[in-house]
Each structure stands twice: as structure tokens, then as C-alpha cells.
Length: 205
Image (tube, rainbow, N blue to C red; front, side, top):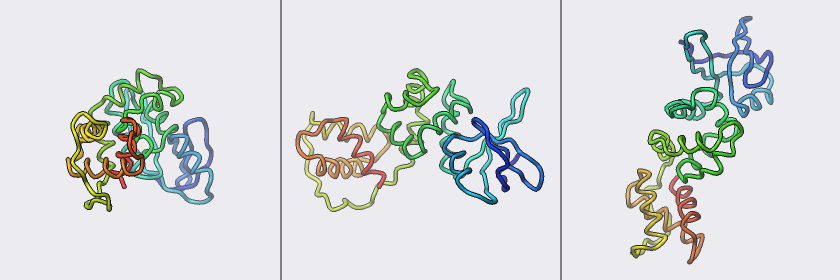
């Protein structure tokens, strides 16, 4: 199987490019974001390749970095998504944006990706493998980030936010630190969704 290709971009078309590798043109399917980055530079470029074999075709999918390829692989674990819809998702959202949207369960944002739709967006968000991938991209800090931790009362937005982060796979100390930092920025009376979203961002810092 082909793991990577290095050559000149000979031409681009909707959803793909032709990469000239020593005189041989390889048709490689790419996300819109990857195509934009390819055409913004001149000279030899390298694409990481994912090869998919079906009954009637061998298709090459290209990525400029490993994070996009990992996201592509994770998306293909979701039933009914497949390679083409995975590229649609990555055309609308960069891997980091996608991870945050999935971890925070931003269904509306994902459903607005062109060609995806609400049903598929829900499958992507609810797929355990996608949640694991999204949370796996976070690298919680080892220290408290200068925000003192106070006891969290039950049945409060802070407690619910911590519970949500625990369900996403974070350890309790990491979740508590992230929520404490988020609360310090948002202030008293912050809404739960805003608290969870900011806490996720803090946990990934």
C-alpha cells in the first residue's frame, strides 16, 4: 500500500488533485482545506496517503498532516459516513475544530457542514470512537494553572460540567481544574453549555 507521495501538483478538480510523481500522475482525493493549502504553495509537496480498495476501484486519499489523516480514519469508523462524507466533514472543519465540536456535542455546528446533514452529524457525535478520538486530542495540564480549586456543591452548573468532562474520559482532577479555570473566566452565573465548552478548551491547553 502507498503510505505517502511526494511530487508536483499538476492540476486540481472538485475534491481531488493530480500529483505528478516523477512523471506519473496520481489522482488523490483531498478535503477542500487540503486542496487550498496545496494550491497556495509552489514546488514539490508531500501528501500522506490512505488507500481504500473497493470491488471496482482503488482510491487514494491525501492529507498534508497526520492530524487530518487520523480524523479521517476516526470518521470512517462511524456507520454510514464513509470516505467521501469524511472528506466533506474535513472540508468544513479542521481536525482541532472537529474535535472540539464533537467533545462539546455541538450538533448544530456539525450539521451545518455542507453535504452532511443532521442525521449523520448526530451519528458522528454519538459514536463512542469519535468521542474517544476527540477527547484524546486534549492534553490536560499537570498543574492547576494558578486557579485555586474550591469544593464544588452538587446540583450546580460546575458540578454538571465536571460530570460531563468525566463522561468524556477526563480524570476528576483534570476536569475540576478545567472547570475552575473556565468559571474564573466566565464569572458567576455562567450557563452550563458555555462552562463545558470553555472547560474543554482549557483542558486541551
